[in-house]
Length: 383
Ligand SMILES: NC(=O)c1ccc[n+]([C@@H]2O[C@H](COP(=O)([O-])OP(=O)(O)OC[C@H]3O[C@@H](n4cnc5c(N)ncnc54)[C@H](OP(=O)(O)O)[C@@H]3O)[C@@H](O)[C@H]2O)c1
Image 1: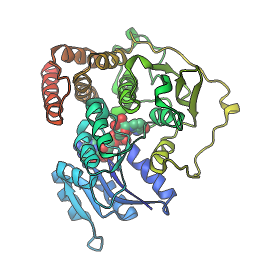
Image 2 (image 1 turned 45 degrees about the vertical axis):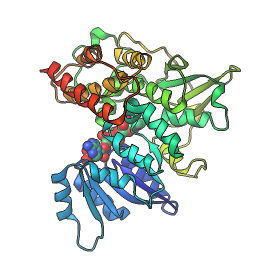
Image 3 (image 1 turned 90 degrees about the vertical axis):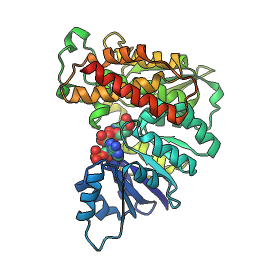
């Protein structure tokens, strides 16, 4: 029985993780769940999965949840960052599944690593802002970082039994998002509702906007660099609108290995939880004759400058990727609140990067300080 703690159990990935657990009740036990403030859904999850702990980041929501839990349910309710750290490092858990959104996941993830817990990582922002630190801590503590992102899971699966030194290229596939094929002039006035309509995946709001700007792919390029220890010029992005090939690895003998499947996040979630084993399930099977055509295009970096900005920050090194990430978090929120336009996102990110004094090998405290500075700087630009 694998014992799991989930950061962000009420989100898109969190709920799909619980679907996987529901299908394999004899294999997984949920010890802890958490959210920011979705107490009604947490209560439902508590009743169904009977975890021993629940952490609610928002203090008022935590107090509210306490009053909602029936007296016959024995559960510890925690709150704030301390609550997230506690459920990430419980002695009884085997793995922490990080399905929280944003760099808020960094501190609890490092806490789990310090306590030698394996990480099933969906929260890409953690690696984007502190990839070097997180990977070196994981190595030091003998901890596995198992990718949940479908692209990174595909790469991880393509590398099974292979020598990482023989990687020539990683080829990340991208659906292209809702605005694939459009030009900048057509996108100047797009609304959040148009941007939220992803063609292939149903996801949380932040990642859906990131997919529409191609920032999501940029964040994934940075995530891939740290997960697979490759250079930035070894990572290519190819637009593949069908989302059937989830990503590929090209080796030094020119061979390319890919992982394919229907677009369903439960598969990479399950693989991260069962690795190195595979587990039978009821998920839809791929029928290539029905799909018939798989197509590929180059990404359009002029229309989608966020992808280029992400590559640039990797090349510049230091804390530039952390700034890119924090600025993007603030700007996506502002776009979702109708405070800025679609192209203000790359514009203000670029201005913030230009104003930043990078730190070469940042500590956790320095990364958190860079995050604070970035958020304030971006907010001043918006105003
Ligand atoms: N969705 C996908 O298909 C997908 C695919 C690949 C990777 N990812 C990555 O997985 C992560 C989660 O994405 P998602 O789409 O599942 O997001 P989502 O649906 O927005 O869910 C986010 C989760 O994080 C919780 N949360 C947010 N802020 C928090 C805080 N301050 N403290 C504690 N919990 C907090 C939310 O709680 P509340 O419900 O209370 O707000 C919710 O449970 C992201 O990093 C994303 O890039 C997602």
